[in-house]
Length: 465
Image (tube, rainbow, N blue to C red; front, side):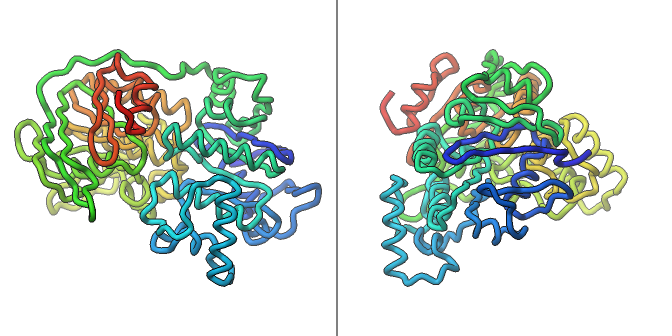
Protein backbone atom coordinates (compact mmCIF):
# COMPACT_ATOMS: atom_id res chain seq x y z
CA UNK A 1 0.00 0.00 0.00
CA UNK A 2 1.19 3.51 -0.81
CA UNK A 3 1.67 6.00 2.05
CA UNK A 4 0.10 8.65 -0.20
CA UNK A 5 -1.82 7.60 -3.29
CA UNK A 6 -2.63 10.50 -5.62
CA UNK A 7 -3.52 12.87 -2.79
CA UNK A 8 -4.68 16.40 -3.62
CA UNK A 9 -4.66 19.18 -1.02
CA UNK A 10 -5.52 22.82 -1.63
CA UNK A 11 -5.16 25.41 1.12
CA UNK A 12 -6.27 28.99 0.53
CA UNK A 13 -4.71 32.18 1.84
CA UNK A 14 -6.11 33.14 5.24
CA UNK A 15 -7.65 29.70 5.81
CA UNK A 16 -7.51 27.30 8.74
CA UNK A 17 -7.61 23.91 7.02
CA UNK A 18 -7.96 20.71 9.03
CA UNK A 19 -6.34 17.44 7.92
CA UNK A 20 -7.79 14.33 9.59
CA UNK A 21 -7.46 10.58 9.26
CA UNK A 22 -6.70 7.46 11.24
CA UNK A 23 -3.17 6.50 12.27
CA UNK A 24 -1.34 5.39 9.14
CA UNK A 25 -3.75 7.24 6.82
CA UNK A 26 -0.90 9.29 5.33
CA UNK A 27 -1.21 12.63 7.14
CA UNK A 28 2.38 12.74 8.36
CA UNK A 29 3.77 11.69 4.97
CA UNK A 30 1.77 14.40 3.21
CA UNK A 31 2.97 17.07 5.63
CA UNK A 32 6.55 15.80 5.35
CA UNK A 33 6.33 16.25 1.58
CA UNK A 34 4.94 19.74 1.96
CA UNK A 35 7.61 20.66 4.52
CA UNK A 36 10.38 19.11 2.44
CA UNK A 37 11.58 16.29 4.66
CA UNK A 38 10.34 13.72 2.12
CA UNK A 39 10.16 13.73 -1.67
CA UNK A 40 7.13 12.45 -3.56
CA UNK A 41 7.56 9.78 -6.22
CA UNK A 42 5.00 11.60 -8.35
CA UNK A 43 2.93 14.77 -8.27
CA UNK A 44 3.82 18.42 -7.66
CA UNK A 45 3.81 20.99 -4.87
CA UNK A 46 2.82 24.57 -5.69
CA UNK A 47 3.27 27.47 -3.31
CA UNK A 48 1.47 30.73 -3.90
CA UNK A 49 0.65 29.74 -7.47
CA UNK A 50 4.20 28.75 -8.46
CA UNK A 51 6.02 25.38 -8.46
CA UNK A 52 7.91 24.95 -5.21
CA UNK A 53 11.65 25.49 -5.53
CA UNK A 54 14.01 22.98 -3.97
CA UNK A 55 13.04 19.99 -1.88
CA UNK A 56 14.54 20.31 1.60
CA UNK A 57 13.16 21.95 4.76
CA UNK A 58 15.51 24.91 4.33
CA UNK A 59 13.98 25.60 0.91
CA UNK A 60 10.46 25.32 2.32
CA UNK A 61 11.26 27.59 5.25
CA UNK A 62 12.70 30.13 2.87
CA UNK A 63 9.51 29.88 0.81
CA UNK A 64 7.37 30.70 3.85
CA UNK A 65 6.38 27.31 5.31
CA UNK A 66 6.80 26.53 9.01
CA UNK A 67 5.92 23.44 11.04
CA UNK A 68 5.28 22.80 14.73
CA UNK A 69 5.88 19.10 15.39
CA UNK A 70 4.22 17.00 18.09
CA UNK A 71 7.56 16.79 19.87
CA UNK A 72 8.80 20.33 20.36
CA UNK A 73 12.24 21.27 19.04
CA UNK A 74 13.39 23.64 21.75
CA UNK A 75 16.50 24.06 23.89
CA UNK A 76 15.43 23.91 27.54
CA UNK A 77 18.47 25.77 28.83
CA UNK A 78 17.99 28.76 26.51
CA UNK A 79 15.56 31.63 26.91
CA UNK A 80 12.48 32.16 24.78
CA UNK A 81 14.34 34.81 22.77
CA UNK A 82 17.41 32.62 22.28
CA UNK A 83 15.27 29.74 21.02
CA UNK A 84 13.45 32.00 18.57
CA UNK A 85 16.55 33.62 17.03
CA UNK A 86 18.82 30.56 17.22
CA UNK A 87 21.10 30.43 14.14
CA UNK A 88 19.74 33.78 12.93
CA UNK A 89 22.80 35.84 13.83
CA UNK A 90 20.86 38.74 15.37
CA UNK A 91 22.33 41.09 18.00
CA UNK A 92 20.98 40.28 21.46
CA UNK A 93 19.33 43.62 22.23
CA UNK A 94 17.70 43.87 18.82
CA UNK A 95 16.59 40.23 18.95
CA UNK A 96 14.86 40.67 22.30
CA UNK A 97 13.05 43.77 21.10
CA UNK A 98 11.84 42.02 17.94
CA UNK A 99 10.68 38.95 19.86
CA UNK A 100 8.92 41.07 22.49
CA UNK A 101 7.11 42.99 19.73
CA UNK A 102 5.84 39.75 18.18
CA UNK A 103 4.70 38.45 21.56
CA UNK A 104 2.74 41.66 22.13
CA UNK A 105 1.30 41.77 18.60
CA UNK A 106 -0.13 38.26 18.75
CA UNK A 107 -1.03 38.19 22.43
CA UNK A 108 1.13 35.14 23.11
CA UNK A 109 1.65 35.95 26.78
CA UNK A 110 5.32 34.95 26.85
CA UNK A 111 8.28 36.31 28.80
CA UNK A 112 11.17 36.81 26.31
CA UNK A 113 13.69 36.14 29.09
CA UNK A 114 12.14 32.98 30.56
CA UNK A 115 14.08 29.72 30.33
CA UNK A 116 12.14 27.24 28.21
CA UNK A 117 12.74 24.40 30.69
CA UNK A 118 10.78 26.39 33.29
CA UNK A 119 7.70 26.78 31.07
CA UNK A 120 4.61 24.52 31.09
CA UNK A 121 4.13 22.41 27.96
CA UNK A 122 1.27 24.53 26.68
CA UNK A 123 3.40 27.66 26.91
CA UNK A 124 6.29 25.97 25.11
CA UNK A 125 4.00 25.39 22.17
CA UNK A 126 3.50 29.12 21.87
CA UNK A 127 7.29 29.45 21.70
CA UNK A 128 7.27 27.10 18.68
CA UNK A 129 4.62 29.25 16.99
CA UNK A 130 6.62 32.35 17.84
CA UNK A 131 9.63 30.84 16.03
CA UNK A 132 7.56 30.55 12.86
CA UNK A 133 6.22 34.09 13.15
CA UNK A 134 9.77 35.40 13.60
CA UNK A 135 10.63 33.71 10.29
CA UNK A 136 7.49 35.32 8.81
CA UNK A 137 5.99 31.97 7.84
CA UNK A 138 2.96 32.38 5.57
CA UNK A 139 1.85 28.73 5.91
CA UNK A 140 1.91 27.16 9.38
CA UNK A 141 1.57 23.39 9.83
CA UNK A 142 0.56 22.32 13.35
CA UNK A 143 0.74 18.60 14.10
CA UNK A 144 -1.66 17.61 16.90
CA UNK A 145 -1.32 21.04 18.54
CA UNK A 146 -3.76 20.47 21.40
CA UNK A 147 -2.51 17.01 22.41
CA UNK A 148 -0.85 18.47 25.51
CA UNK A 149 -3.25 21.35 26.21
CA UNK A 150 -6.08 21.76 28.68
CA UNK A 151 -9.34 23.21 27.32
CA UNK A 152 -8.54 26.79 28.35
CA UNK A 153 -5.08 26.55 26.72
CA UNK A 154 -6.61 25.13 23.54
CA UNK A 155 -9.07 28.01 23.40
CA UNK A 156 -6.22 30.48 23.72
CA UNK A 157 -4.31 28.73 20.94
CA UNK A 158 -7.37 28.92 18.69
CA UNK A 159 -7.63 32.68 19.31
CA UNK A 160 -4.03 33.02 18.12
CA UNK A 161 -4.70 30.91 15.02
CA UNK A 162 -7.78 32.95 14.14
CA UNK A 163 -5.72 36.13 14.38
CA UNK A 164 -3.06 34.62 12.09
CA UNK A 165 -5.67 33.62 9.52
CA UNK A 166 -7.31 37.05 9.69
CA UNK A 167 -4.08 38.70 8.57
CA UNK A 168 -3.72 36.34 5.61
CA UNK A 169 -1.61 33.49 6.93
CA UNK A 170 -2.72 29.91 6.25
CA UNK A 171 -2.87 27.23 8.92
CA UNK A 172 -2.93 23.47 8.35
CA UNK A 173 -4.20 21.73 11.47
CA UNK A 174 -3.38 18.01 11.69
CA UNK A 175 -5.57 16.56 14.42
CA UNK A 176 -7.72 13.68 15.63
CA UNK A 177 -10.06 15.89 17.66
CA UNK A 178 -13.19 16.32 15.61
CA UNK A 179 -14.86 18.77 17.97
CA UNK A 180 -11.88 21.07 17.46
CA UNK A 181 -12.02 20.62 13.70
CA UNK A 182 -15.59 21.88 13.77
CA UNK A 183 -14.72 24.75 16.11
CA UNK A 184 -11.69 26.21 14.34
CA UNK A 185 -11.40 25.17 10.67
CA UNK A 186 -13.17 26.42 7.56
CA UNK A 187 -12.48 23.31 5.45
CA UNK A 188 -11.35 19.78 6.20
CA UNK A 189 -9.59 17.11 4.14
CA UNK A 190 -10.02 13.46 5.16
CA UNK A 191 -7.43 10.78 4.35
CA UNK A 192 -7.98 7.04 4.63
CA UNK A 193 -5.44 4.35 3.68
CA UNK A 194 -3.27 6.90 1.90
CA UNK A 195 -6.05 8.38 -0.22
CA UNK A 196 -8.11 11.54 -0.04
CA UNK A 197 -11.66 10.34 0.59
CA UNK A 198 -13.38 13.64 1.38
CA UNK A 199 -12.96 17.39 1.15
CA UNK A 200 -15.67 19.21 3.08
CA UNK A 201 -16.70 22.67 4.16
CA UNK A 202 -16.63 22.43 7.94
CA UNK A 203 -19.93 24.28 8.28
CA UNK A 204 -21.64 21.58 6.18
CA UNK A 205 -20.46 18.51 8.13
CA UNK A 206 -20.69 16.89 11.56
CA UNK A 207 -18.34 14.99 13.87
CA UNK A 208 -20.21 11.76 13.10
CA UNK A 209 -19.84 12.29 9.33
CA UNK A 210 -16.13 13.00 9.67
CA UNK A 211 -15.64 9.92 11.85
CA UNK A 212 -17.42 7.80 9.24
CA UNK A 213 -15.23 9.21 6.46
CA UNK A 214 -12.06 8.54 8.48
CA UNK A 215 -12.88 4.97 9.45
CA UNK A 216 -15.38 3.74 6.88
CA UNK A 217 -17.84 2.83 9.65
CA UNK A 218 -20.13 4.51 12.18
CA UNK A 219 -18.36 5.48 15.41
CA UNK A 220 -20.09 6.32 18.68
CA UNK A 221 -18.42 9.44 20.07
CA UNK A 222 -17.79 10.47 23.69
CA UNK A 223 -19.15 7.32 25.33
CA UNK A 224 -19.74 7.57 29.09
CA UNK A 225 -19.06 4.07 30.40
CA UNK A 226 -21.00 2.74 33.42
CA UNK A 227 -19.22 2.68 36.75
CA UNK A 228 -17.42 -0.43 37.85
CA UNK A 229 -17.83 -2.54 40.96
CA UNK A 230 -14.94 -1.70 43.30
CA UNK A 231 -13.44 -4.43 45.43
CA UNK A 232 -10.49 -4.53 47.80
CA UNK A 233 -8.01 -1.68 48.11
CA UNK A 234 -5.12 -2.18 45.69
CA UNK A 235 -3.26 1.15 45.79
CA UNK A 236 -3.02 3.39 48.82
CA UNK A 237 -0.88 6.53 48.58
CA UNK A 238 -0.58 8.77 51.63
CA UNK A 239 1.11 12.17 51.79
CA UNK A 240 3.10 11.69 48.60
CA UNK A 241 5.44 14.65 48.15
CA UNK A 242 7.88 15.03 45.25
CA UNK A 243 10.63 17.63 45.81
CA UNK A 244 11.21 20.30 43.17
CA UNK A 245 13.47 23.17 44.18
CA UNK A 246 11.69 26.15 45.74
CA UNK A 247 8.45 24.19 46.24
CA UNK A 248 7.36 20.58 45.81
CA UNK A 249 6.24 19.34 42.41
CA UNK A 250 3.69 17.21 44.27
CA UNK A 251 2.55 18.38 47.69
CA UNK A 252 1.01 15.91 50.15
CA UNK A 253 -1.13 13.97 47.66
CA UNK A 254 -3.22 11.03 48.89
CA UNK A 255 -5.39 8.61 46.89
CA UNK A 256 -6.89 5.16 47.24
CA UNK A 257 -7.74 2.95 44.26
CA UNK A 258 -9.64 -0.33 44.49
CA UNK A 259 -9.74 -3.42 42.32
CA UNK A 260 -12.32 -2.97 39.58
CA UNK A 261 -12.01 0.82 39.66
CA UNK A 262 -10.58 3.55 37.41
CA UNK A 263 -9.31 6.68 39.11
CA UNK A 264 -9.07 9.60 36.71
CA UNK A 265 -6.40 12.23 37.34
CA UNK A 266 -7.05 15.60 35.69
CA UNK A 267 -5.10 18.83 35.56
CA UNK A 268 -3.47 21.34 33.26
CA UNK A 269 0.00 20.20 32.16
CA UNK A 270 2.65 21.20 34.69
CA UNK A 271 0.51 20.97 37.84
CA UNK A 272 2.07 17.83 39.29
CA UNK A 273 -0.14 15.04 37.99
CA UNK A 274 2.56 13.57 35.75
CA UNK A 275 5.15 13.67 38.55
CA UNK A 276 2.64 11.99 40.85
CA UNK A 277 2.17 9.18 38.33
CA UNK A 278 5.94 8.81 37.96
CA UNK A 279 6.31 8.57 41.73
CA UNK A 280 3.69 5.81 41.87
CA UNK A 281 5.54 4.02 39.07
CA UNK A 282 8.83 4.19 40.97
CA UNK A 283 10.51 6.68 38.61
CA UNK A 284 10.76 9.59 41.06
CA UNK A 285 11.97 9.92 44.62
CA UNK A 286 9.25 10.96 47.05
CA UNK A 287 8.33 11.13 50.69
CA UNK A 288 5.14 9.65 52.06
CA UNK A 289 3.94 6.10 51.68
CA UNK A 290 2.64 4.02 48.77
CA UNK A 291 1.43 0.46 49.20
CA UNK A 292 0.16 -2.16 46.77
CA UNK A 293 -2.25 -4.59 48.43
CA UNK A 294 -0.89 -3.53 51.79
CA UNK A 295 2.79 -4.03 50.94
CA UNK A 296 5.39 -1.39 49.98
CA UNK A 297 5.18 -0.69 46.25
CA UNK A 298 8.03 -2.03 44.10
CA UNK A 299 8.83 -0.70 40.64
CA UNK A 300 8.35 -3.99 38.79
CA UNK A 301 4.93 -4.61 40.38
CA UNK A 302 3.18 -1.87 38.37
CA UNK A 303 2.13 -1.84 34.73
CA UNK A 304 2.98 1.66 33.50
CA UNK A 305 2.30 3.58 30.29
CA UNK A 306 4.33 6.82 30.50
CA UNK A 307 3.34 10.17 29.06
CA UNK A 308 6.43 10.27 26.83
CA UNK A 309 6.26 7.10 24.72
CA UNK A 310 9.42 7.97 22.78
CA UNK A 311 11.90 8.85 25.51
CA UNK A 312 10.56 6.83 28.46
CA UNK A 313 8.18 4.19 27.14
CA UNK A 314 10.32 2.67 24.40
CA UNK A 315 13.74 2.29 22.82
CA UNK A 316 13.09 3.85 19.43
CA UNK A 317 15.87 2.09 17.52
CA UNK A 318 15.10 -1.34 18.99
CA UNK A 319 12.64 -3.61 17.23
CA UNK A 320 8.93 -3.66 17.98
CA UNK A 321 9.33 -7.21 19.31
CA UNK A 322 12.17 -6.22 21.63
CA UNK A 323 10.13 -3.31 23.00
CA UNK A 324 7.10 -5.49 23.63
CA UNK A 325 9.02 -8.06 25.66
CA UNK A 326 10.24 -5.44 28.16
CA UNK A 327 8.88 -6.22 31.61
CA UNK A 328 8.27 -9.90 30.83
CA UNK A 329 11.82 -11.23 30.98
CA UNK A 330 13.24 -12.17 34.37
CA UNK A 331 16.51 -13.54 35.69
CA UNK A 332 19.57 -14.32 33.62
CA UNK A 333 18.12 -16.72 31.09
CA UNK A 334 18.51 -16.09 27.38
CA UNK A 335 15.56 -14.80 25.39
CA UNK A 336 14.30 -17.05 22.60
CA UNK A 337 13.88 -14.85 19.51
CA UNK A 338 11.04 -16.90 18.01
CA UNK A 339 9.05 -16.67 21.26
CA UNK A 340 9.75 -12.94 21.50
CA UNK A 341 8.43 -12.38 17.98
CA UNK A 342 5.36 -14.52 18.61
CA UNK A 343 4.59 -12.57 21.78
CA UNK A 344 4.82 -9.34 19.79
CA UNK A 345 2.57 -10.66 17.01
CA UNK A 346 -0.14 -11.50 19.56
CA UNK A 347 -0.11 -7.93 20.87
CA UNK A 348 0.00 -6.46 17.36
CA UNK A 349 -3.03 -8.53 16.32
CA UNK A 350 -5.08 -7.94 19.47
CA UNK A 351 -4.54 -4.18 19.51
CA UNK A 352 -4.67 -3.66 15.74
CA UNK A 353 -1.18 -2.20 15.52
CA UNK A 354 -0.24 -1.30 11.95
CA UNK A 355 3.34 -2.48 11.50
CA UNK A 356 5.12 -3.94 8.49
CA UNK A 357 7.06 -6.33 10.73
CA UNK A 358 7.66 -6.92 14.43
CA UNK A 359 11.38 -6.94 13.64
CA UNK A 360 11.33 -3.33 12.37
CA UNK A 361 12.34 -0.51 14.78
CA UNK A 362 9.40 0.73 16.80
CA UNK A 363 10.44 4.27 15.89
CA UNK A 364 9.27 3.83 12.28
CA UNK A 365 5.66 3.31 13.42
CA UNK A 366 3.27 6.26 13.57
CA UNK A 367 2.85 7.78 17.00
CA UNK A 368 -0.61 6.30 17.38
CA UNK A 369 0.54 2.80 16.51
CA UNK A 370 3.42 3.07 18.95
CA UNK A 371 0.90 4.07 21.61
CA UNK A 372 -1.34 1.08 20.92
CA UNK A 373 1.63 -1.28 20.99
CA UNK A 374 2.96 0.03 24.30
CA UNK A 375 -0.47 0.04 25.93
CA UNK A 376 -0.94 -3.54 24.71
CA UNK A 377 2.35 -4.47 26.36
CA UNK A 378 1.19 -3.11 29.71
CA UNK A 379 -2.38 -4.43 29.56
CA UNK A 380 -1.16 -7.97 28.95
CA UNK A 381 1.08 -7.93 32.02
CA UNK A 382 -0.27 -9.70 35.11
CA UNK A 383 -0.23 -6.65 37.40
CA UNK A 384 -2.97 -5.63 39.84
CA UNK A 385 -2.32 -1.94 39.06
CA UNK A 386 -2.06 -0.11 35.74
CA UNK A 387 -0.96 3.52 35.59
CA UNK A 388 -1.72 5.01 32.17
CA UNK A 389 -0.66 8.56 31.29
CA UNK A 390 -2.42 10.07 28.26
CA UNK A 391 -3.47 6.60 26.99
CA UNK A 392 -4.97 7.88 23.71
CA UNK A 393 -2.67 10.80 22.92
CA UNK A 394 -2.08 10.91 19.17
CA UNK A 395 -4.45 7.99 18.56
CA UNK A 396 -7.17 8.13 15.90
CA UNK A 397 -10.83 8.21 16.78
CA UNK A 398 -11.55 4.57 15.97
CA UNK A 399 -8.62 3.39 18.06
CA UNK A 400 -9.65 5.65 20.94
CA UNK A 401 -12.90 3.71 21.19
CA UNK A 402 -11.02 0.40 21.10
CA UNK A 403 -8.49 1.48 23.74
CA UNK A 404 -11.25 2.69 26.04
CA UNK A 405 -13.01 -0.64 25.66
CA UNK A 406 -9.78 -2.46 26.57
CA UNK A 407 -9.32 -0.29 29.68
CA UNK A 408 -12.90 -0.93 30.80
CA UNK A 409 -12.44 -4.68 30.25
CA UNK A 410 -9.19 -4.54 32.24
CA UNK A 411 -11.04 -2.81 35.08
CA UNK A 412 -13.91 -5.28 34.97
CA UNK A 413 -11.40 -8.14 35.17
CA UNK A 414 -10.52 -6.86 38.66
CA UNK A 415 -7.55 -4.57 38.03
CA UNK A 416 -7.07 -1.14 39.57
CA UNK A 417 -6.31 1.61 37.04
CA UNK A 418 -5.05 5.18 37.34
CA UNK A 419 -5.64 7.21 34.16
CA UNK A 420 -3.90 10.58 33.82
CA UNK A 421 -5.36 12.51 30.91
CA UNK A 422 -5.64 16.05 29.57
CA UNK A 423 -8.81 15.01 27.72
CA UNK A 424 -11.83 15.84 29.85
CA UNK A 425 -14.08 13.71 27.65
CA UNK A 426 -11.73 10.77 28.28
CA UNK A 427 -11.67 11.34 32.03
CA UNK A 428 -15.45 11.67 32.17
CA UNK A 429 -16.00 8.63 29.96
CA UNK A 430 -13.67 6.24 31.77
CA UNK A 431 -13.23 7.26 35.39
CA UNK A 432 -15.31 6.01 38.31
CA UNK A 433 -13.81 8.80 40.44
CA UNK A 434 -11.74 11.86 39.49
CA UNK A 435 -9.12 13.87 41.38
CA UNK A 436 -7.89 17.21 40.08
CA UNK A 437 -4.36 18.54 40.51
CA UNK A 438 -3.58 22.24 40.72
CA UNK A 439 -0.22 23.71 41.67
CA UNK A 440 1.02 20.33 42.86
CA UNK A 441 -1.90 19.59 45.15
CA UNK A 442 -5.11 17.59 44.84
CA UNK A 443 -7.72 20.34 45.05
CA UNK A 444 -10.91 18.43 44.24
CA UNK A 445 -12.39 14.95 44.06
CA UNK A 446 -15.58 13.98 42.23
CA UNK A 447 -17.53 10.82 41.68
CA UNK A 448 -18.65 10.06 38.14
CA UNK A 449 -21.98 11.85 38.37
CA UNK A 450 -20.38 15.02 39.78
CA UNK A 451 -17.54 15.20 37.21
CA UNK A 452 -19.08 17.61 34.71
CA UNK A 453 -16.83 19.45 32.25
CA UNK A 454 -17.67 22.75 33.96
CA UNK A 455 -16.74 21.55 37.43
CA UNK A 456 -13.57 19.83 36.23
CA UNK A 457 -12.53 22.90 34.22
CA UNK A 458 -13.02 25.21 37.21
CA UNK A 459 -11.00 22.93 39.48
CA UNK A 460 -8.21 22.68 36.88
CA UNK A 461 -8.06 26.49 36.84
CA UNK A 462 -7.74 26.60 40.64
CA UNK A 463 -11.28 27.87 41.19
CA UNK A 464 -13.31 26.67 44.16
CA UNK A 465 -16.07 24.19 43.23
